[in-house]
Length: 110
Image 1 (cartoon, rainbow, N blue to C red):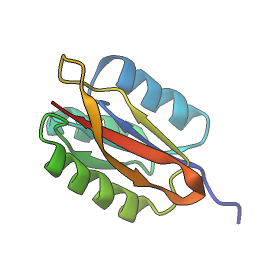
Image 2 (cartoon, one colour):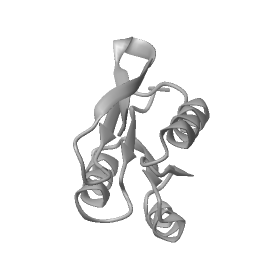
Image 3 (tube, rainbow, N blue to C red):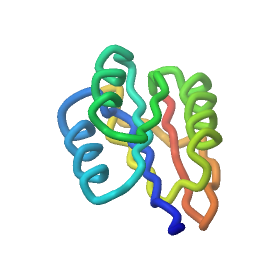
């Protein structure tokens, strides 16, 4: 059986992040959904077969990193990470962690 590609998208409760999640799912990816609004994540998860969710608030970087690691652990290999969420200001990236295949995820802080 061929392995399914996985993507994690932060900021999927609405707008561009939600649209990206739908596009990746339509292309056959298993989608990891992250956002602050759990009720919207749950609704989107019910529409995207095989998706996984984690509530995540990027304005709280320590909690966001913990949620991200939990989602990576649940999904296994992750091929793509999209962070389509923000807190309305320019930030420096202080949290970086590697994923299998050499990808790097970055989370910002004020």
